[in-house]
Length: 544
Image (tube, one colour):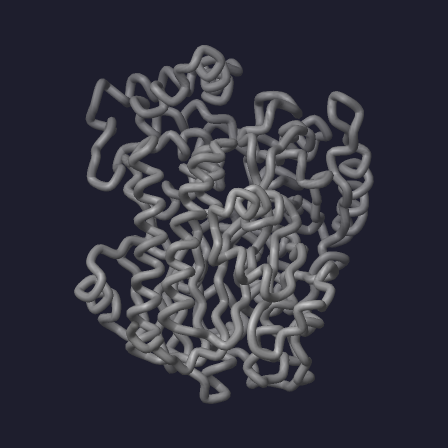
């Protein structure tokens, strides 16, 4: 038998997007994921309370910086400049990451597939960006992506958009393999003290195949195979498994705050202009990895667009058309054949400049006030601002579902939820759905309530497990929070937590105290401006 390779890896962080006890327990009982289960059995584990909002682009930066969104600056998939929006990237994360703090202390890292890490910042080690990166991401060091492909073969960030059904699941499994193969190659090449490999498909499979336990199991089994090989080849001293949030079935309703606010006289709507992403964005299949659909040159779109706009002027919007088509199973068929601009011409949207308050992005979980002097065409004066925010808290706190249950478990001013220099970038009023069982939508024109657009979606509690050298397997992790992961990982490597971190070292590991690390130099923010990234977010229901 060959000698087991020894590496310098002190701590391995395994990221399971949307991993949670309710998903893992059936897999453990079926002995489907023995390597993952061994981490839980030999160490200590518990639920990991996520943050507000519990979605990938904000929660992962919170996990790997140890700070709340008010300190790192990312509140959702989108960043806003007035009423204009773009997809977030690493330049919007304005706190030091774990691997940057380790670099400061002379320790190297290999990071593969961490969300919101493109473009990567230089460290001693290697970074291969994940979610929200383009399909051909810049990696660190320069030229690394070519090296990976030469060594392990094909490497992609996403599955092809035209993959469907069983083919898509095979792609998920292959993407998981790519993460493992790339990580092992880079760990061997750079011999880092810290390793972080994240698996996104454990979340994606629920959005694409809600309730299909066979496909979920196939993805997790693929993850487990890669984890087993990583543990064998890298032999880390300590292993931490963590997720950004949980996942579960939604049994409540879809609530549409913008429609509610319109009926309160606060939201104005329009059928002209770009607005926020709508059904027309989701329906945009003009380019799917080289597969062309309808374009503006086809079938007289100008005439059709004018006709749709005319229908919208008398209340027949694309949302209403979509609802009718969906009822007879034709929505997707038509969506693939209607040019985006045609659908948008009939899509009723929030008119941001004319509205007093609105939900601009459901992932942010909140209402933004159109404040004079802050927004380009603000209509709410400074003197009216506090009163309006208080009114929004009061009126939204009282909203109940058609069966009499409260829609929100908490409605609060943003300063009660977030802290830090970037709080003003958050919505002014934060709306936390009851048990994350009520689905929020920015749609207008279809009534205040409807069935959830997605039957499965994010839940508050994820999972954390810690195993290995210096870990107390009897420690109680029942109070673990997302912010605690970063200080805990630093402690496993004998380093203090950052003074600006919001979390604490979990009791499974001995704390090394806190220390002030160098201040973060935010620098200039870059635009993502990538239609393909936006389309993929729309595919998963993150852009409406």
